[in-house]
Amino acid sequence: MPVFSFTAPLITPEEEALERENLSKEQKAEVQEDLYGGSGCGWTKALYDVEQNDGFLTTKLQELEQALSEMTPNLLKDYNKAMETAPDVVQTESDPVKFLRCERYDVIAAAKRIQLYWKMRRKIFGDDRAFLPMTLHAAMKDDAHVIESLAIYSILPEDAHGRKVLFFDRIKIVAPQVDRDIALRCMFYMIQVISEDVHAQKHGFVCLNNMKGYDLYKNFDRLFFKQASVLMVECMPTKTKAYHLLAGSENGVMSLVLPVKKHIAAKELRLRMVVHFGTDYKIVDSLKPFGLSSKNVSHVVGGDFTEAEWTKWLSDRKETESLSEMNCSPRLSSVVHSFGSALSS
Image (cartoon, helix red, strand yellow):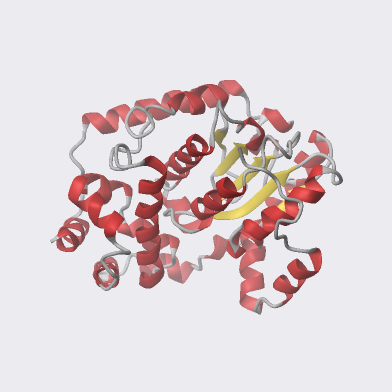
């Protein structure tokens, strides 16, 4: 069982302030835009339009293929295993175009993201499930009940800027009912679902994390958050653009946990963390400047999103996955198909 250490490394308010101060003007503007949304959410109109240019995607996919081929076999072992075991799953669920969009067509960054995606997928799911379709009755078959009945993760309506909102109830992750591995698999699945949306590939998503009632000894898990941080910003074909921690009192447990949590988080995620203290009403109200209204907040913390709405979402999702399995032959463009075939040869 994970134990909180009172001597654990942490980041002080002074260190956090210095980190923000040392950002370039462009970096500060990007963080601000990610947190508050706004025009383009980091994507200029020119960057949108470039994808429509003849040959642009073909060229970028060829460059990405080259970048992957130049990685060492050891780095690519998980990706290559996936290509060997389930090439159709690789082509549909780690479509290289999604990773290019997520990294604004930086082929080196996209290649690293694909490599890490399959490393994390294999690590979290194991070889028996990593290469199955990422659906509730395939890769998630043994964990679907956690998503369906406990609602630890919920995908809520889009914010004012059209970004998906992922609600994460950290308080419900308590072993042995829900251990670290189950929670990570559920998070992977939910972010995978979000990444199917083109807008999410380009603009990312918003995460709300309920920490009201956080128990230092039941809920703290350094390794869980370290791996969750990778899923949120480093390896999926979408990334967290704003991370809102919904807490109760500013004193007590939160004063101990937050500096440690921020130290564990990847810098990209830490810079986009916002902590909200107070009553449910105060927390919901404090989210408004970030483009979030009560419809984007779970009823668990005073929002309007209900269990009935989550049940409806699940029903629709199951229907979507069933229809997808009925039409199991992947409809792939020739350029993406040749991308995968060339790398596996």
